Image (tube, rainbow, N blue to C red; front, side, top):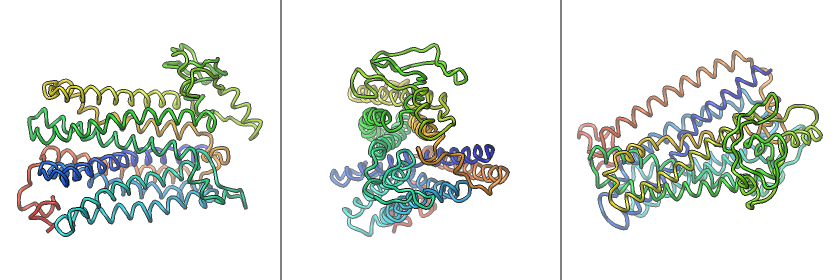
Amino acid sequence: MMEEVFLARLQFASTTLFHFLFVPLSIGLVFLIALMQTLYYFKKEEIYLKMTKFWAIFFLINFAVGVVTGIIQEFQFGMNWSEYSRFVGDIFGAPLAVEALLAFFLESTFIGIWVFGEKKVPKWVHLLSIWLVSLGTILSAFWILVANSFMQNPTGYRLANGRAEMNDIAAVLTNEKLWVAFPHTVYASLATGAFFIIGVSAWYIMKGRHVEMFKKSMTLSLIVGLIASLAIAFSGHSQATYLMHAQPMKMAAAEGLWEDSGDPAAWTLFANIDVENRESTGRIDIPYLLSYLAYSEFSGKVEGMDTLEAKMIEQHGEGSYLPPVKTVFWSFRIMAGTGGVLIVIAALALWFNYRKTLEQKTWLLKLLVLSIFIPYISNSFGWIMSEVGRQPWVVNGLMETATAVSPNVTANQILFSLIAFSTIYAILGAVMVWLFVRVIKRGPEAPPKANVEATDPFDQGGAAQ
């Protein structure tokens, strides 16, 4: 079964990572668009309406592709992970159903009102509709994280008839993992949307096109981006303190810590992880920092993987309970490092923007264009650390990943669906990139009149009428 397990995990990882490219951008973009429309509502300045309509095109494209990738992703629970679905479906299925019936319906309903109702509903209703779309995207993330948090930290259940059955919805909704992951995810999404707008705006400023409009877009997004990036760091710290008592093996793997640390514990900046010999050599350590990350104080030791695995063998029986240590170790550093880069870039750009010299800093504008990709890197490696660090468990402490796959699905069948899904995703990704580039090159200029109905539902002469 190991080949089937590997292919099923590879398929779920690839589809989830691809889907996760769209989710944070949708959450972040629509929030900023709602802010822009709010500024237009109160200030009555047409430039804010123009900003709202331009950035809305990217949101609508991204949202449409994200919906398709999410639907495909869910097929896998029945295809490749039927044993998992049978074991935990009573709990896992409930938040997914609420997400579809509440959050997604909220998003899709008010997207329709917002896109097609601009001239048909009062302005305050039109503004309210985009804020409800924003709320819907955040609620979608919340309910997905409710399900995922149970996998990380099972609560509110009982074991009966060979299944985990929900017996306390309040415990599921107050799961500690949920309430450290949810803010972190929202802040990361806001940073993703902000830096997308920052990067595109920087490109326009360098080209000297619609400079006034994109300077306003840039300023608003830099403020949101810096606040979100700082909030990511603080919420990430709360996740570290959570891991110490809820998932200590993940924390130890993230540090490449085989033996118990000293007191105080040093945080490792770099190390050569030798899994075969169970040691980490060539360490570059920062004194006291791991103790602070773990306990919010500059003292306290951290248990190593050897100690933790011995405890797990005593509790669960013989076996290997180590996650892929190298993957977890470096994923954490890439995630944290890119998060720090976002803070520096946003602060630096805001400083030059305040001094009204940002337009003259071509090197910084080029860096801001490249910064579009940094949140995607940070988001992806953060997800990898969170999910891979839980291994070998699919439901922490309750069900191992190797026992969760569908028993009657062959490796060849999984390989076929992996290739099929990857091909579909590659086409969707290429189409989305092509559409984004096309919109960016065209700019906020009005399209030719003959194409208005097909391309711009907001235009006064188009389909919105």
